[in-house]
Length: 490
Ligand code: HEM
Image (cartoon, rainbow, N blue to C red):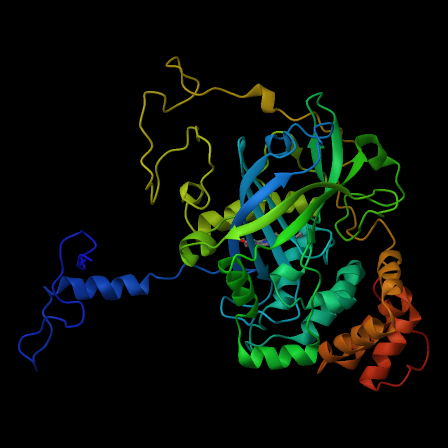
């Protein structure tokens, strides 16, 4: 085997990577020992800002393969025909913890997907839950503050979390999932994924349908109890990373069955609930799951930083045949992600190998920091032009979105019932699941001021009095004197 030699960053052979150049064995260093300076300077720049949320994550490449023809709903090339396989990337994450947080924490899991389709990248940036805590993007930064560290103590604050939740009854559905068994999966392979928002599909006849995406794990659901997780975290902070990486490395490729729920465009006005409210699911009996394909992860990244830390997913990345919906949260996210990437990774983040579409990219954006990909310069560097530069693609215009109403600040919890869906979910839990749910909530309320606990128990009582009673029992708290103190509207 031939020997390879270290080089400087400029490619010149470098004689000494362990000893710096000094004036004698006891002498000071020389400024001309430039490679020492280069090495120290490089180390100072080894990190980029971590994601403000979902900072700890794991990812892998794979394939999405179509198993059912849904061209009646969508003309997206990714669904073009049965058997069609599209390369993709997945990144899974926890939400609240920093880059070095333990994996086995009770938290929502991110389920971010990038499909490298023939028509450009389609990103579906979802979670392992079909709903979310809030329904208005105006509330998102405040919600995330409660999940992160207190500005003075620099500690996580259970008081802040429950204060916010108990004043935000729309969070009840997601809170019920978070403190159920599904809130602490054993690893990323053992959970479902959901697009969560309502998106749209549109077909070659330019008809629009509303759609929800579901990814059902073929590995089965596995979860840790709180007690198991305590022991696991003491042993390793990377259990989900280890599980995913090792399985794929060993050829045991995880798979998910990909399904959709579909609603005709005009039905959105007629259904009794707001189909664009991300705190709600669509009833499966009215909108049954339609199986459309299989997602398999079969290839670990070669370089975690380059391919996973720099992976940049954004709900704004849609392709012809797939569209947005009026969901306010989704609309807020259409801005937030690309803005985060430009700040965190850099202006040309989409030209990095992991983010780069597998099709030609043609536009009139130019220059800026780290224009590393050196696209061939032509006379068509402005538009319109008469030198045959790229022109509009009118076939990609989505069907018109019908809108009506008056613009004002609609109350974020204006559309009513925050209790029926968590009630229906709680009713599905067996006795042991209910018991664990009560215990998990009680454990998370440790140290929370009593008036906040009472307010939250008041909300839970509106979902089902048995929840409030069960949690109260775990907390060994007496029944309050007088009526329940749910002050938040709902
Ligand atoms: C208005 C509401 C929301 C805002 C403003 C928001 C904003 C953000 C931001 C800024 C990031 C970091 C992006 C980065 O630096 O790469 C992020 C990550 C993420 N968000 Fe959200 N988010 C919102 C709601 C949601 C919802 C409802 C979901 C799921 C249904 C979700 C799923 C994710 C996931 C999975 C990631 C990690 C993506 C990755 O793996 O790189 N977010 N979010």
